[in-house]
Image (cartoon, rainbow, N blue to C red; front, top):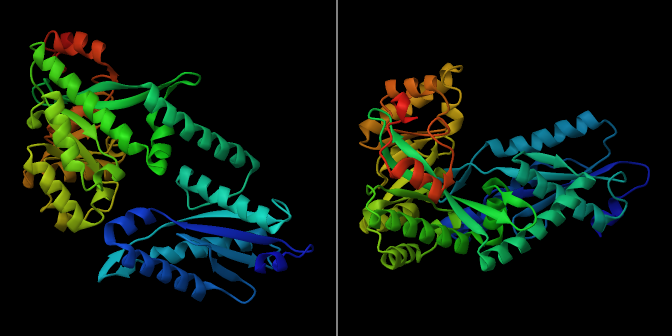
Amino acid sequence: KILRNSLKSDETVALLVLNIDRFKAINDSLGHTAGNYLLYAVGERLGHFCREGEAVFSMGGDEFAFLLMGYKDSDAMRNRIDDMVKLFDQPFDINGESYHVMVSVGIALYPSDANQSEQLIQQADTAVHSAKEQGVNFQRYASAMQMRAHERLQLENDLRRALENEEFSLVYQPRVHLQSGELTSLEALVRWNHPHRGMVMPGDFIPVAEESGLIVPLGEWVLREACLQNKQWQELGYPSIPISVNLSMRQFQQKKLVDVIRGILAYTGLEPRYLELEITESMTFDKDRAFEQLKKIKAIGVAISIDDFGTGYSSLHYLKNLPIDRLKIDRSFVNEVLVDSKNAAIVSTIASMAHHLKLKVTAEGVENEEQLQFLQAQDCHEGQGYYFSRPIPAEVFEKLFLRKPVNWLVQDGM
């Protein structure tokens, strides 16, 4: 009603819908009391930011609405929105700890995007979901977003069917010891062969699976299939090497995760030492809970690595106590080591730190000889990337890399 009364035919009104990024992870990790306090603190911060003629409302859950009125200059309106996003540069104090919280903002304008209040809210909500997908702070509504929202819903329905119809498959990418050139381990990656769209890449369906909760059954399927394949290769007499599988945030937060892992290992007959699980830095947001979960996984003999290291918010003080085995340097750093001295320094520092912490270090995204030589000079243990091999199906992996030993550092072995 307040919004409806604010819409005047002779002026532009901007409706901003703000969504707290990763609020569910915060709520699940720190508890509902902390989550409720964060919602209160965000609302209070937005309330103090309000000027005369503006208004802020809670829309339930982790969403807020902010009304901007009386702006005739679009640059002034954009600057105001920029200032709002900057509000979240300052961390929030929760239970005596500082947490940086980001927001995604969707923007819809009256009357250009919608001429009714309910429609304006819907357009702004569509825009905020688009902002989250694009990984940007804010997004103005565009009609194409409505089509994308519909496609996303269709994709979720297709995902449910795909699990039942076994439309998923695994591909495997080798990891190579950078000093000896030998195959040391491999990573299992999921692909979706959609009956109409063809091969769908993980970047297109994993976020939808995460949001819908389908990532849990899908993740368990990937883990079981990877362990089955590795055991099968061992029974064929090939060298026994670890296989690495990614864990999603939702899987990692499951209380029964260790029971699931133990059950899959028992079902497939794979020894725990031949399985490695990859988590991301963001999964250690709740330090105490993450530590307990990792400790349980380590206790059954499964190795743990932190994937995309350097792109998250891990505390180095905390890192030294984490029960992990490996750091994987994100491909974004490796890609620029030859042209950006800062990235080269980051890779060198991570490698050195890993050695001091007695952790293995793997560089992702190795694509050429020059990158390989740089990484060898930093004493990285392993490399993974297109220089060695793209992710390939099991039968191709077996034919190329298992039936006879390959040395990637010898030209004849390439």
